[in-house]
Image 1: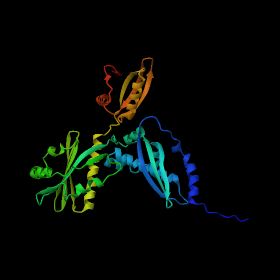
Image 2: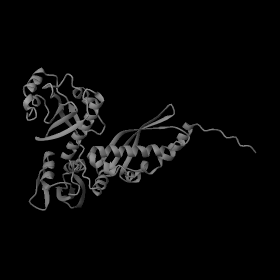
Image 3: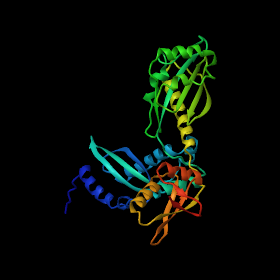
Image 4: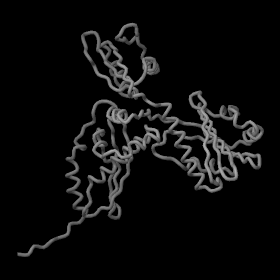
Length: 359
């Protein structure tokens, strides 16, 4: 008896592979209660061949999503400590994932994933690594790059300034800072030239006050023959921090070298912003609050706020009676920070007793 083997087209195999994938653990996972970190638009590609394995594509997406999350909430130096994390550890911190889009082009499989990580598990993982995460808050900052030619005793902002020309072209998905460059203003240029001799001590308020932005970064690029020194004047939340960096054997007439410096500077600024928003996960303050059980609307809004507040590690209802619902809240911060956060959202508490009462 002779059996004839008929080659199966890879796309027919995909139907079977997809069916099997649908019953995998993560597809059956429901969104858990509580907060999560959501990472979207993870794009993965893989050749669609006979040995194609969709699970490998999904696993690759999990690693990429985890890497992007760490880039959002962990400083660049700390991120190096967790580069070798095992895939099973990553999967253990995932609440759910979804396939936003998948398609085939020229026998290449493309998929777009969204991955949700359990925030508590992420914080616990980082705490064990002695890493404090940050709240991933977006920030808009005015940035003014100024090239100072020490040989010619001159400076430039707008023309002949590759930092000005190229800064906005360099952007990563995990960047939290959005930069606004100044508009070309000859008066500003004249003002700065007049301040040339005291440029490192100048506060730049006459320029920054023209913009409807609270925070700014002034990048002073001192051009020398064999090196470039950069002084960054970072003014965020009414605090000024100066950072000095030196780049040897660098030619700022070369755009590729300027691009590398910009990438380096953006890492420094992102790390600085993350440090400002760092969460001390080792501090777990218990807070006890009671709300009147008859105020259903207020209870719903309060629980929604608790879910959306990043410094709240956990909360649950400890008991309830005819008059009150009692909450036990675990907070990664001080009582004053908690009260300020709540007050900013319209909740004020009487704190005279151990259990606080909504006023």
